[in-house]
Image: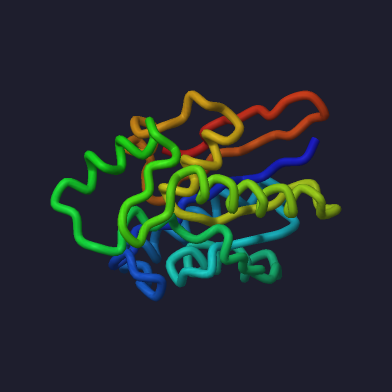
Length: 179
């Protein structure tokens, strides 16, 4: 049974692509590495954003694994313009997957690009892969496999967070392992 360990990055200093982990986030990454140790992960695929790569670096070093990056795992942009009521818009975007604000990306589009990355990862020969991403896209990937995931589940995510997706020929099982 193939497994994907879907990981939300540790605490970061901001939302920009080059925002690094905070000191707390760096400590969390070391704790995460210990948590992941017994899971027999063979491959790592990460968002290209710095905070995602830094989240998995301690684990990669300990296990002599390279970090492959995939831009399809980057965070969804809600809007390119500041929004005073961004949380309301974000909530609405889980009800209307096609809602697309100025300079942003709809949840449906983000979900499709993320799901395409997951399909490619599943086509690889490895049994267990760590996939490091961001809260919004993580929730959309969970929703792709189980429509019950949405805004409330996004709000409940922690930094970091870990879900395992177990793939069999007829079903996908989802289990939260962290948080």
